[in-house]
Length: 279
Image 1 (cartoon, rainbow, N blue to C red):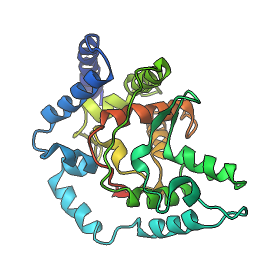
Image 2 (image 1 turned 30 degrees about the vertical axis):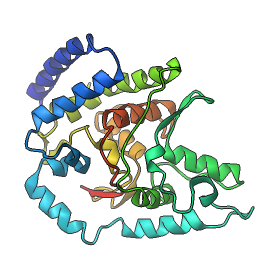
Image 3 (image 1 turned 60 degrees about the vertical axis):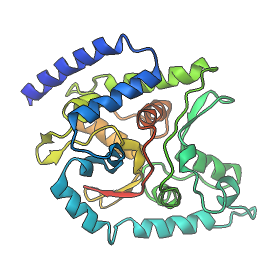
């Protein structure tokens, strides 16, 4: 493990040197994508990175594809459909906020100029509920994971196209905050997101192969065998913080929303294909 950490630290030093000459987010994105193209040249076409760790592990992919014939998230989609169509006390439903089938995944995350913040789909779901006099849902699992699974399923094939408006410096600041979060070491293990999901991606920590960060936001929410249930992206963020013995941030707080903004921008051009099954 110490050898891995030393190698990661060396790699990140090199990355920070090259980052100094980067002009902006689009140059960041091109360099990010190129890193994974070079690290995993066997992944063809490039869009296959939307399948996470299964894009780089042929044997595991076969098992995953067999699971997808009867996916464990099917019940969540069915439950999510019921929640989505449930009539509120005022006679409205989530359809009044997100359209007939909720196929709006490509709209999130996005920069809300009026409010000066990143909007995510889960945050928008709860704001719709509260605006109609309904109780908000917990962000990490349960009903929220189910309704977002239904909306993600109906949005499959939509392309990630996160924009950073050039006329609002606050949007760039949010992106930079998410970027800083991704590369900053934290916790007792002194690890950054980039330590695992860039410079040791494809390597094993114990029995687990570390997935590439390129494509991470495409497939949420997911059913994880480890959880034996559905979970949202921010639940996974919190789990990563726990793994490195760092205090997690609040789900749908500014820190995680900005991190989602950054990693989603890095994956622009890939297709949304959630919900998904993962280990």
